[in-house]
Image 1 (cartoon, chains in turn green, orange):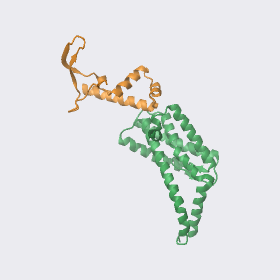
Image 2 (cartoon, rainbow over the protein chains, first blue to last red):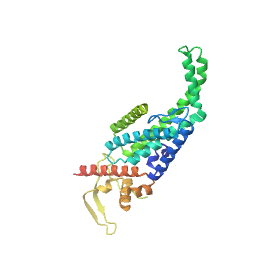
Image 3 (cartoon, rainbow over the protein chains, first blue to last red):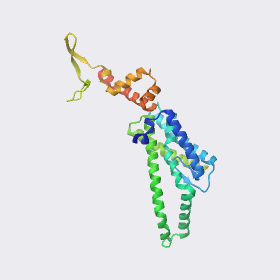
Image 4 (cartoon, rainbow over the protein chains, first blue to last red):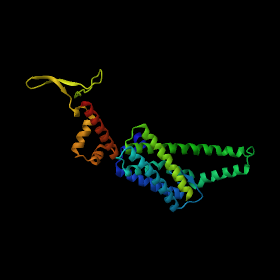
Length: 197
Length: 93
């Protein structure tokens, strides 16, 4: 049962993984539009005042395909039998924890809280003694939001790595290092692309 | 309970040789030094896998569906098995 959550790619058929990937992606787009989120990076999620479906789909497409292409190339280099479909399904399904994080912004809650905190800190102009009592009430919010975010990212990486390992059958440490470098490179390139856009 | 054919020496882990075979019908015994065939040097799970591969005419997709595993998992098992067979073949030369 535990294995189904940490590595569904071992057990589920291509068709089942395909349904899960489509379901996960549609859910992600829907939540992002409803709760004003942006996928401005392969591993990124940020909240904004408003969002449109076209921007969400564009950003998601760039984020996903960049990571898929880079991981596929590295995977193919590690094991020539690596299939593009397997890597695509892995990336799409691994993003599910990121999509669940969007719930943090129901009613623009997180965006408003962070905006308020930013305003307080900006108005403090370096003198934090007056605002320390204000900041304290945000500490619990920041702590909670950080822990949730961290857990989601950990689960994302567990799914991504387990899926990649199943798709490529890598066993050597150097292949694992290439995987880590590939993810970092994909993130850097995605940030450059989004910065240009 | 069906006893399993031991393949490795429990003392030094070297591959065992068959030195005696008996006929249960006429009680004839045959002695010699016979190597265990390559296929029997695989684990039971691996032998079942190879048998299934044969029975499904080499269709990994069908094997995955029957075994309740994903296609990449079955393909990975096959690749690992191929590597193991090649290693045993090179050791036997």
